Length: 442
Image 1: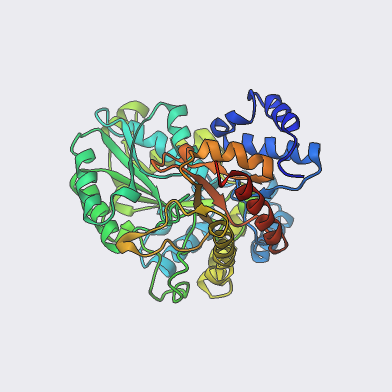
Image 2: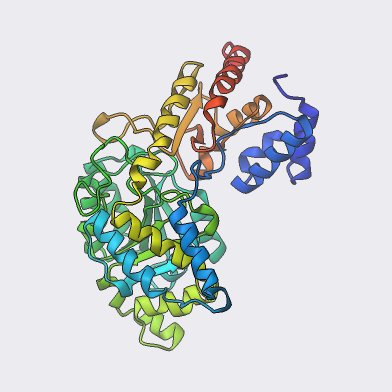
């Protein structure tokens, strides 16, 4: 059965605007998903899907019922408040306090259509706050679409591969970029998508202190909130250890907190922006000049940028998010315990890979400790590029994305553990063993 028929695979790629499977490395994540789905239909072979970060857990029923009840009360016929319904703003603020220890007031909690829309709105705003600052600095590897957003709206991008600059080396490298005077903001995820590296408390302090010193706004993407499963004590509301955050060290920060992975609520596209109150009230003359107002950061973010993207977040979804945040604060949703399922799966998948000739690309975290197991992981084969590996694995019914699309300087691929079922582990082992048998001598 493996490798799959080359003519079928190549014909499917051509249907998606690619000349053959060798161009899959340049495909977007969603384009790759489409190619793989069509190959499955054409061959009748189920793929091992590691390309798309769909949650592998059921959505929290508390959110579902809260939406249901809100719809029955008639919320579907009314536009939601662009600033967010009071319940969401209150419980969003309370959630931040319960699990980060930070105090973000209700008025600084802003709903968005997933962190994707939140990042788009923030990147747009960052381009406009200062005419002399036109660049967003990424800590790579990163979620590819966030850089794509910058390209769409004409924001310049700079980057640092954080895997090569840990600890005090990060301070030196960051300061080199900040000193140019061109950096308006920086963006990173913690845990990192795709490497699953986690910034240490010292590294967050370095970022925060330098952001204040050089007047740079930090966009902290917490899509994988409290998912460093190496610390078993996490996840109790109002008790440390909390989700590590740069918010302890600077006021120049916006936190993006998504319900997609934490509550397995990805399909409803719900998230919040938690804006530091100091930054929320800050006046930017460039914004005032552009929009003929007082230039306040929060009002322009909400009433100009977000309003231009959508007339608010779906009304029922806001009620669902509010209910889940409240339940988490009250200990009714042990989301850290629930999402630890991803760590169990990732550990097994990585074990299968390393037993069959593959290696973990971003394998070490700060201080030389092994990168934890979680939602994402990185893997490589020999000294192949990610594109080369992708173009070969596709014929063995295994799909993932190339690390090059994430801005990584290291070669390999990003895999996601969430969609792989336990009953697929033997099949994954079988396919990778066959792959290694075919290519280990080449």
